[in-house]
Image (tube, rainbow, N blue to C red; front, side, top):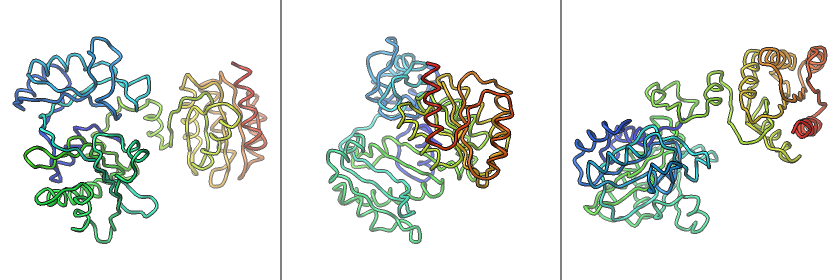
Length: 399
């Protein structure tokens, strides 16, 4: 689960991390009040969307002005003008794609006198099962670009959960960033605070880009991006309360209500599969035969008839879907349950696109019998390769 920058900074502030003063606003009137409370003389007006590259982004609407999604204001009136231009407008960045995201809230923050910019992040290293820190002197840039062009400027290390953060971790960050004296001490304290926040809140990623040194010698988290482990949200009702549903795909929201692993994609063939590995293989073979998957959808190993019905409804709600491939290997999941769920969904929502079903495993013959005797226009497949070829052919014939 992702949250907005201002929410991330509020979380970090709880753990003593240095962040600028700021206020989230939803109208020009609120922005004027916030700017006066902050006092100036320099304010930063930041679009709050779940995407990076805001500063370099562009608004679709001409009325939003030529500047990007992060703007410097030198007066209260200018703050108000920027807010009026940006609120409700659609911001397009490298991460939003051409569709962009509508800006529904803004963050008004104190301006900072920047001397140097760095990059600092923490994430879960799946290989070691530890929290890893990534540090670079190239702050303000996409870390992927830094890794591609100058990988030697990136330093990484992991923290053993048995010991937690130790003084040498802070010294390593300070050395990587070329910080000495008081700044080195600040770096040591910051690493400890960020690690504490990461573990306590079950984060999956924490990115500070940029981490800055101000001209008066203070380290400050100028931007913050935080993602949480969705599997641990039951422990954090305060974090769940930060969720902004307007930033999420409606189909993904509906899927989460039924505990379905669903991600919307840009293709035309909807997929319903059990097991993440099998789902990836299904998507790959669709691409192999020249079409694109419309989604990733894993119904899980113990899905019920109701869960399968919900999954089918979510797939058919996507107007881009021109055909559906159901690929189930029945282990814990029984093929007859899948068949009944698919047919129940077809009867309830109708079927206007080709549907190919491949079943294998527990109760497979019963599952196939249920489908074959249903009287519905469902295409059976013998194996995954056969299923992929049949759905691709059916979609192309419809087109």
